[in-house]
Amino acid sequence: MEKAFLRFFSAVILCAALAVSIQTAAAQAKTENKADKKVLIVYYSWSGNTAELAKIIQKETGGDIFEIQTEKPYPKEYKAVTEQAKKEINDGYKPAIKGKINNIAEYDVIFVGSPNWWGTIAPAVTTFLSEYDLSGKIVAPFFTHGGGGMQNCAADTAKLLPKSAVVQAVTFSGYRVKDSQEDIKAWVKEVLK
Image 1 (cartoon, rainbow, N blue to C red):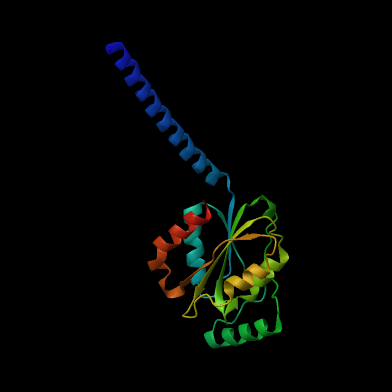
Image 2 (image 1 turned 30 degrees about the horizontal axis):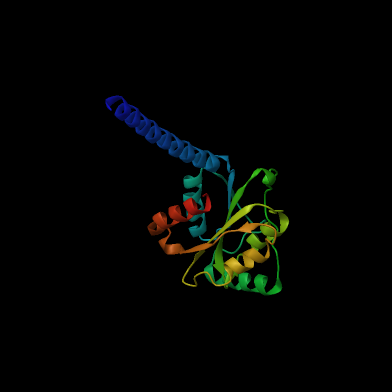
Protein backbone atom coordinates (compact mmCIF):
# COMPACT_ATOMS: atom_id res chain seq x y z
CA MET A 1 0.00 0.00 0.00
CA GLU A 2 2.83 2.36 0.90
CA LYS A 3 4.60 1.70 -2.43
CA ALA A 4 1.38 2.36 -4.35
CA PHE A 5 0.91 5.64 -2.49
CA LEU A 6 4.50 6.67 -3.21
CA ARG A 7 4.06 5.87 -6.91
CA PHE A 8 0.80 7.85 -6.98
CA PHE A 9 2.37 10.79 -5.12
CA SER A 10 5.40 10.72 -7.49
CA ALA A 11 3.06 10.72 -10.49
CA VAL A 12 1.15 13.73 -9.10
CA ILE A 13 4.41 15.64 -8.52
CA LEU A 14 5.60 14.76 -12.03
CA CYS A 15 2.31 15.97 -13.57
CA ALA A 16 2.46 19.22 -11.60
CA ALA A 17 6.06 19.82 -12.67
CA LEU A 18 5.13 19.07 -16.28
CA ALA A 19 2.19 21.51 -16.12
CA VAL A 20 4.44 24.28 -14.72
CA SER A 21 7.02 23.54 -17.42
CA ILE A 22 4.36 23.80 -20.17
CA GLN A 23 3.05 27.09 -18.76
CA THR A 24 6.58 28.52 -18.56
CA ALA A 25 7.32 27.45 -22.14
CA ALA A 26 4.05 29.02 -23.35
CA ALA A 27 4.80 32.29 -21.55
CA GLN A 28 8.33 32.31 -22.98
CA ALA A 29 7.01 31.64 -26.50
CA LYS A 30 4.54 34.52 -26.15
CA THR A 31 7.36 36.85 -25.05
CA GLU A 32 9.55 35.69 -27.93
CA ASN A 33 6.71 36.33 -30.40
CA LYS A 34 6.53 39.95 -29.19
CA ALA A 35 10.28 40.28 -29.49
CA ASP A 36 10.10 38.94 -33.04
CA LYS A 37 7.86 41.82 -34.15
CA LYS A 38 9.89 44.70 -35.51
CA VAL A 39 8.23 47.98 -34.56
CA LEU A 40 8.29 51.41 -36.18
CA ILE A 41 6.65 54.53 -34.78
CA VAL A 42 5.88 57.18 -37.41
CA TYR A 43 4.30 60.49 -36.45
CA TYR A 44 3.67 64.07 -37.43
CA SER A 45 3.52 66.70 -34.69
CA TRP A 46 3.03 70.44 -35.02
CA SER A 47 2.70 71.43 -31.36
CA GLY A 48 4.75 68.63 -29.79
CA ASN A 49 1.81 66.71 -28.26
CA THR A 50 1.83 63.87 -30.82
CA ALA A 51 5.64 63.72 -30.54
CA GLU A 52 5.34 63.22 -26.79
CA LEU A 53 2.86 60.38 -27.31
CA ALA A 54 5.13 58.80 -29.96
CA LYS A 55 8.07 58.88 -27.55
CA ILE A 56 6.04 57.08 -24.87
CA ILE A 57 5.14 54.39 -27.41
CA GLN A 58 8.79 54.15 -28.48
CA LYS A 59 9.88 53.70 -24.87
CA GLU A 60 7.31 50.93 -24.38
CA THR A 61 8.13 49.05 -27.59
CA GLY A 62 11.82 49.74 -28.13
CA GLY A 63 10.88 50.35 -31.76
CA ASP A 64 12.48 52.69 -34.26
CA ILE A 65 10.99 56.16 -34.59
CA PHE A 66 10.53 58.45 -37.61
CA GLU A 67 9.20 61.98 -37.43
CA ILE A 68 7.30 63.11 -40.52
CA GLN A 69 8.45 66.60 -41.40
CA THR A 70 7.17 68.72 -44.25
CA GLU A 71 9.70 70.20 -46.66
CA LYS A 72 8.02 73.56 -46.21
CA PRO A 73 7.32 74.05 -42.49
CA TYR A 74 3.89 75.09 -41.33
CA PRO A 75 3.45 78.55 -39.80
CA LYS A 76 4.28 78.79 -36.10
CA GLU A 77 1.20 80.89 -35.34
CA TYR A 78 -1.85 78.80 -34.41
CA LYS A 79 -4.49 80.67 -36.45
CA ALA A 80 -2.29 80.64 -39.56
CA VAL A 81 -1.61 76.91 -39.32
CA THR A 82 -5.29 76.07 -38.82
CA GLU A 83 -6.27 78.10 -41.89
CA GLN A 84 -3.56 76.47 -44.01
CA ALA A 85 -4.49 72.99 -42.77
CA LYS A 86 -8.17 73.55 -43.53
CA LYS A 87 -7.36 74.64 -47.09
CA GLU A 88 -4.99 71.70 -47.66
CA ILE A 89 -7.53 69.18 -46.35
CA ASN A 90 -10.37 70.66 -48.44
CA ASP A 91 -8.14 70.64 -51.55
CA GLY A 92 -6.82 67.11 -50.93
CA TYR A 93 -3.30 68.56 -50.91
CA LYS A 94 -0.43 66.29 -49.86
CA PRO A 95 2.62 68.31 -48.80
CA ALA A 96 6.07 66.99 -49.70
CA ILE A 97 7.84 65.41 -46.74
CA LYS A 98 11.51 65.17 -45.79
CA GLY A 99 13.48 61.99 -45.34
CA LYS A 100 12.90 58.43 -46.44
CA ILE A 101 12.49 55.07 -44.75
CA ASN A 102 14.40 52.66 -46.98
CA ASN A 103 13.70 49.51 -44.98
CA ILE A 104 9.92 49.78 -44.43
CA ALA A 105 9.47 46.16 -45.54
CA GLU A 106 11.39 44.98 -42.45
CA TYR A 107 8.73 46.22 -40.01
CA ASP A 108 5.83 44.10 -38.76
CA VAL A 109 3.99 46.68 -36.64
CA ILE A 110 3.78 50.36 -37.53
CA PHE A 111 2.32 52.87 -35.08
CA VAL A 112 1.14 55.94 -37.03
CA GLY A 113 0.47 59.17 -35.15
CA SER A 114 -1.22 62.41 -36.14
CA PRO A 115 -2.95 65.37 -34.57
CA ASN A 116 -6.65 65.73 -35.32
CA TRP A 117 -6.84 68.61 -37.80
CA TRP A 118 -10.33 69.59 -38.83
CA GLY A 119 -11.70 66.16 -37.95
CA THR A 120 -9.11 64.13 -39.88
CA ILE A 121 -5.40 63.33 -40.05
CA ALA A 122 -2.78 65.96 -40.83
CA PRO A 123 -2.02 66.25 -44.58
CA ALA A 124 1.62 65.25 -43.96
CA VAL A 125 0.42 61.91 -42.56
CA THR A 126 -1.77 61.44 -45.64
CA THR A 127 1.36 62.00 -47.74
CA PHE A 128 3.28 59.39 -45.76
CA LEU A 129 0.50 56.78 -45.96
CA SER A 130 0.15 57.40 -49.69
CA GLU A 131 3.88 57.04 -50.40
CA TYR A 132 4.60 53.81 -48.51
CA ASP A 133 3.24 50.34 -49.13
CA LEU A 134 2.10 49.01 -45.76
CA SER A 135 0.31 45.96 -47.19
CA GLY A 136 0.24 43.08 -44.74
CA LYS A 137 1.53 45.22 -41.88
CA ILE A 138 -0.19 45.68 -38.53
CA VAL A 139 -0.91 49.40 -38.35
CA ALA A 140 -1.81 51.00 -35.03
CA PRO A 141 -3.12 54.58 -35.45
CA PHE A 142 -2.89 57.04 -32.57
CA PHE A 143 -4.09 60.62 -32.42
CA THR A 144 -3.95 63.70 -30.27
CA HIS A 145 -6.61 66.37 -30.17
CA GLY A 146 -7.39 69.68 -28.54
CA GLY A 147 -10.97 68.76 -27.66
CA GLY A 148 -12.30 67.25 -30.89
CA GLY A 149 -11.69 63.60 -30.03
CA MET A 150 -11.28 60.99 -32.77
CA GLN A 151 -13.84 62.26 -35.32
CA ASN A 152 -12.85 60.82 -38.77
CA CYS A 153 -9.16 60.25 -38.01
CA ALA A 154 -9.36 56.45 -37.64
CA ALA A 155 -11.74 55.94 -40.57
CA ASP A 156 -9.70 58.16 -42.89
CA THR A 157 -6.49 56.34 -41.92
CA ALA A 158 -8.09 52.94 -42.56
CA LYS A 159 -9.28 54.08 -46.02
CA LEU A 160 -5.66 54.76 -46.98
CA LEU A 161 -4.60 51.28 -45.81
CA PRO A 162 -6.97 48.76 -47.43
CA LYS A 163 -4.35 45.98 -47.44
CA SER A 164 -3.10 46.51 -43.88
CA ALA A 165 -4.37 45.06 -40.61
CA VAL A 166 -5.47 48.32 -38.98
CA VAL A 167 -6.08 47.82 -35.26
CA GLN A 168 -8.35 49.82 -32.96
CA ALA A 169 -7.09 53.41 -32.92
CA VAL A 170 -6.75 55.54 -29.82
CA THR A 171 -6.88 59.25 -29.21
CA PHE A 172 -5.67 61.35 -26.32
CA SER A 173 -6.10 64.98 -25.44
CA GLY A 174 -2.81 66.62 -26.34
CA TYR A 175 -2.81 68.49 -23.07
CA ARG A 176 -3.22 65.27 -21.08
CA VAL A 177 -0.74 62.95 -22.78
CA LYS A 178 1.49 62.88 -19.67
CA ASP A 179 -1.51 61.95 -17.51
CA SER A 180 -2.49 59.15 -19.92
CA GLN A 181 0.67 57.05 -19.75
CA GLU A 182 -0.99 54.00 -18.17
CA ASP A 183 -3.74 54.01 -20.83
CA ILE A 184 -1.12 54.36 -23.56
CA LYS A 185 0.91 51.46 -22.14
CA ALA A 186 -2.21 49.26 -21.93
CA TRP A 187 -3.07 50.02 -25.57
CA VAL A 188 0.48 49.29 -26.75
CA LYS A 189 0.42 45.97 -24.87
CA GLU A 190 -2.86 45.07 -26.58
CA VAL A 191 -1.46 45.95 -30.03
CA LEU A 192 1.60 43.76 -29.52
CA LYS A 193 -0.31 40.70 -28.26
